[in-house]
Every structure is written in structure tokens, then in C-alpha cells.
Image 1 (spheres, rainbow, N blue to C red):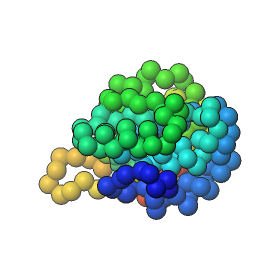
Image 2: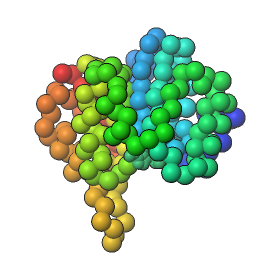
Image 3: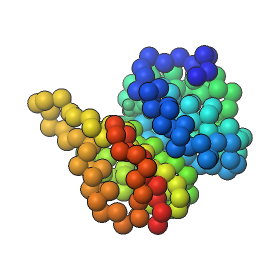
Image 4: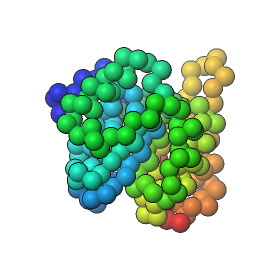
Length: 186
Ligand SMILES: C[S@@+](CC[C@H](N)C(=O)[O-])C[C@H]1O[C@@H](n2cnc3c(N)ncnc32)[C@H](O)[C@@H]1O
């Protein structure tokens, strides 16, 4: 990863070998449009920018309410340090308010790593499915994540399972592990 970036957390690096495999056919293609729900300091978005969206016409839309102001400042500095901020569209908001603004079937990749509350994951997943192009990829993080005991939160897994079970979009499972990756074939 570009050494000019500053991060205080890393939920992403261990996923890189699988992402390289899934995204290899897209590397350097023109006009790619990616969207990430939950960008934090920008680690996963900048990896995509530096390793897949290498053609200058590729873009990534990053949605995050940035409740943590320091994380947002780091995101901004990291995007500036990439030297390719013209390829990053930043949306400071909850995903559910922004996703309906995108045209249907316009995105090559959606990465869902925002709110981990089950209902939010369900909504993000359903809205995202409308936006992914035929042949595009949808990736969910934290399939096996469990909320700490004693909270009222619901885990992502049943929400992701419901989407996979419905399968109205002719989803092909690419990977099932800590992350779920599916190809949308409808
Ligand atoms: C685990 S971090 C994302 C990490 C990032 N994808 C990476 O790998 O570097 C989760 C982020 O989701 C954001 N988030 C929480 N609720 C959200 C929502 N409803 N919509 C979009 N983002 C949300 C949080 O503010 C936080 O920055």
C-alpha cells in the first residue's frame, strides 16, 4: 500500500489475496464504477483505487456518515495523498439516503461494510442489488460478526442469508467466508 497513507485501523489487508483473485479481470479497465458503503479512513477504497481502478476513467463512490471526525480527516488526507481525488466521490451520509440516487444497474462493484445492524445490512443489500450491473460483484463484509452480548443489535448473517436465499437476482456465489462475494447475473 502507498506509504504516504495514514491509517489507525486495519480491517482490510487480510482480504487482499481474495480481492486480487475476484477483481483481476477488472484491473485497468476503463469506465469502472465502484461504490463502497462504509469507508472510514479509506483503506479499502484506496486499495481499490491503486490496484483496480488504475484507468483514469474509473471512479469510486464512498458513503459514510463519518461519526468519527478524525477518521474523516484521515480519509480526506489519504484521498488527497493518492493524487487521484478526481476519481473519488465522497458522500457524507447514511447509505440508505444516498443509494436511491444512483441509476439502476450502473455499478461494477458494491462493497458493503457500513452499519453492521442486521436491518441496515438487509436494506443496503437489497438497494445495492438494484444498482449492480449484470455480471457485477456485490461483496458483504463481516458475515460471521456477532454483536457484543447484552446489546439489542442483530447480526448481519441472517440479513445476508435472506438476500442469498431469495436469489431473485440470479446470484452466483463467488466466495463464502468472513466475507460473502456474489456475482449478479440477472
Ligand atoms: C469497519 S468501518 C469501514 C472500514 C473500511 N471499509 C476499510 O476497510 O477500511 C465501518 C464504517 O461504516 C460507517 N457506517 C456506519 N453506519 C453507516 C451507514 N448507515 N451508512 C454508511 N456507512 C456507515 C462507519 O462510520 C464506519 O466508518
